[in-house]
Image (cartoon, rainbow, N blue to C red; front, side):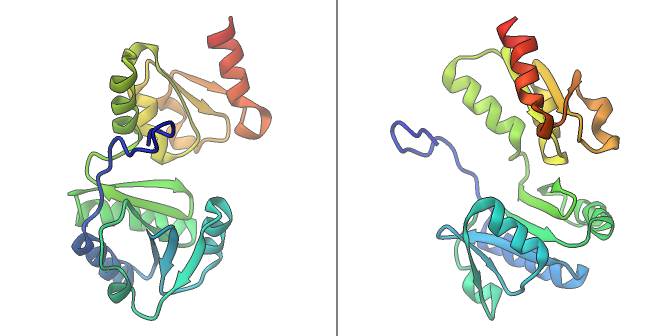
Length: 193
């Protein structure tokens, strides 16, 4: 979104049918599912993980009696939520069951689903094209699985120290954790010096 002009530069959504398919999958896999409609979190259930999303986003939670009846439009993404070790097994299964979608963990208890090819690398590429910035000039800093494509795309891909162990080898550099000013470290080391 271009905040100066209050204009959406690019948006690719999940269709209503895909969201309903994900809802059916969530029932089968015994996970919670949320999506976002009219700046609200929509779900049929309550969970500690939905509460975390409410806190992170500041959005209201619209708990509905029938998810499919409430979701009649496209949405940018869905999130499946559950206990982390179980959700990791769901991630692998969902990638096999729905290879036409982009599936990634954004937190150990958040499994994000969007249109195939819609991820942070694609968004970064679109922004770089608009601003006429070469890929080699981009620094991307991340801390979770949903940042991986962006880390791999950037000229300099940086993980903060609290990234999951299985992702650590996929970046060019690892800096202090996000709680210990890792982004400031990147700015000092690679931009100001």
